[in-house]
Length: 536
Image (tube, rainbow, N blue to C red; front, side, top):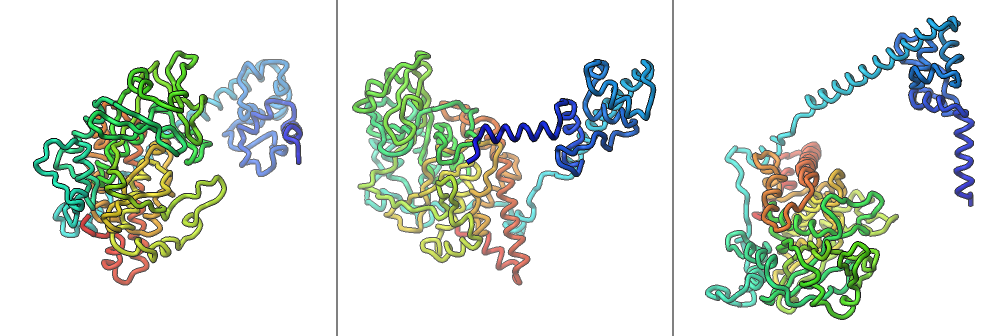
């Protein structure tokens, strides 16, 4: 095995042999461009092309980025050799030398002006050549007669509530808490409706009610607390680890990233804005560790509280990865933000089935999942129950669209309510690793869409509505998030990323339609196989 120091030592000798000891040689390579010489680094020529009308010596000095003071210095090796010798045997007199310097300075100014002009023209050209895409072709496919858009709700179609399945009466019972109403009114086709006002009341209760009991949730890689309120309602608490502007570290895998409390809040609102209504309600809240958490802590959790060197109250609990002193949750000095996600009904009353996501990632730093290497993977999924019929595959695509908009790669399982059978919505849970990289669009998240080339008609209508405006998706989410007590929830760059990513989704849909048209004999029939109207 080659020693690391030996390897870098050899690398350094190679550079010395190639460039020599003259720092101006480095400037020459940088100015001339490695790709233009056609030779290896050690063989870059002393003179180059593209210096305009300058003479050989002027080209040399200009390429090396030398200024007048450097060339006038008698210690500089090029002061009396390269520049003067390159001038075609010109005299070494002071007048000629000064003229050389003036020419070099003028040449550099011209080059800078030309570069700035080229950059300006390029930018202007790009702006002119790439106008915003209105996706009129997709719009016409959805509405060929120009009658306007109708966003299909679908909630009322064969959509009994949990209360109805369990034969529990909810009408005329004013003593029911918002927690109880939310759980009993979960429907077969959606987590909630917007018409009954339950969600707003539930969010308000979670943000203000007194906490009477808490305990650490077992399992998981990071600290979570089960919170019980005075009304007997329960919520999952995820504490704040860092600020809104801190993104996922570039060298971290998706499965090692910290969870973000604000991502849980934003994910609920985005799911709601898109009309999915498949995520449990989540709200932000500011807690006092000294008066609201520490007095209620018990057992192992209690023993993990400490005061940091900065004088802040911290704790870390017990979990498999990030529960130690170096990964502690700290207040400021004892005030702590967190997200509160409403509990779903207890499994004794409404059991849930856990499904392995068909586009699950490998969760390994070297291995790839089957869908990442098999171009016909969707054909296998389409032939496998429950993806071979009903709404399940379209719900998977909806989930992929939601995850792509948020940048969430951490989707390994999903759940459904057993009492509703297979033809029910997928519960959108666990979004703590979303909104981590605002400037990166992870297209692989959209694999269910571009591998299967199917999308729900109402979903496409909603995406087009936000793309065309007048209200953009970023503006709609920003307005929704203003209601949260911890607003602002998202860094502004994450909001603007939504509009960019929505545009990419529509481009993938268009590509699917184009490919199907090219391979089809009956265009209308095959387009219907891509844009599916299932009344949801």
